[in-house]
Image 1: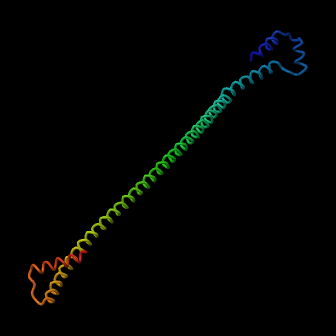
Image 2: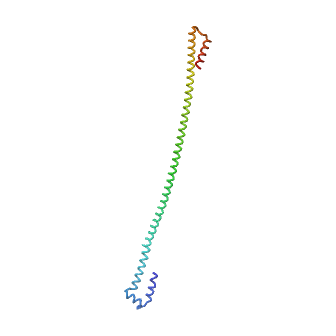
Image 3: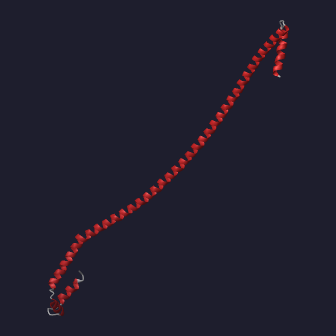
Amino acid sequence: MLSLLPIIATTALTEAGGPLDQLTGQFGVNIPSLLAQVLNFGVLAFLLYRFAVRPILANLDERQEKISSGLQYAEEMKLKLAEAERHCAQIIKTASLEAQSIIEEARSAAKAHLERQIQEAAHLTEEMIKKAHEVILLERQKMLQEVRAEVSALVIKTTAAVLSRELSSAERTSFAEAAIRELAS
């Protein structure tokens, strides 16, 4: 608009027959009409800028800001997702290590339990063998006593039959002890 002022000033100062009038006459330009058109164009440009271009630019700026904030949010979410995946992988790794340690503990506990069971079974077997030996010894002693009693009775009977008489208790004891000594050796 300031650039139009020199033209308007020169037009007002020029005379009716000056070089500017000749020039405008040759091209068919009417100065008052030109000034009115320039003024109308300026008003229209101002109104379009004020009510059309400015809101559109503001809307574009707002959209650009939304887009940039959306992109920034997407980047943040990518970072959070990557962090969550790392955290998840760490948890899985920790759980895997814990599971392996639990399995190892279970194996060692099972091995220790098996060893205890084997030791208990061996101990019980030894006890059973000892008891069996004791029973065998008792049975053997019992049998030996029975055999001794029978042998001494047979010796006494045989001696009495050979001698054809009844033996005294001292003779019976002496023959029984002799027979027992013979059996023991």
